[in-house]
Image (cartoon, rainbow, N blue to C red; front, side, top):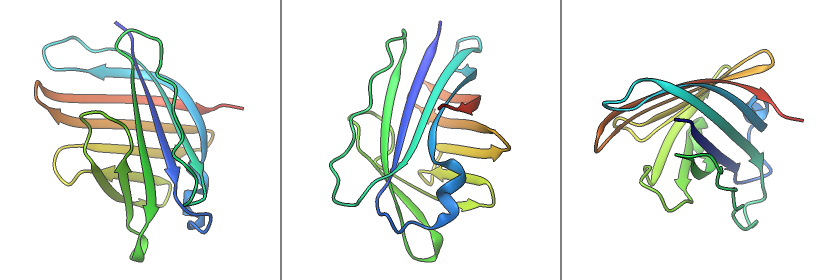
Length: 149
């Protein structure tokens, strides 16, 4: 079974720290996803990180057409001390709030419990990792993404 995810992360202000620069753009690739009580399967993933004015309306991400597809949207804001806070803008079962930091070329965001999104820039690729503890048990995924033109 093919699973797909589109995670749209929007930066809330034009004055965001330059530390977001390595992650901006639309990334696409694939990897593996392990769901509870199922064998590992192919995982297609798209991540879009774009800078938007704070007053701009939320963007509407397209739902992937593949079976098992899922779309999630978070609006990110940088708080004092470099803390990044994200607000869930989709109607889904993902955490309402996530937060984290950029450490070098790694952007790590989580819900303070079991959920985690991690993006690590390595040259021309973005290594995406997700980890979550849902109602059915642990979900783990990893994908290597390329910047789309």
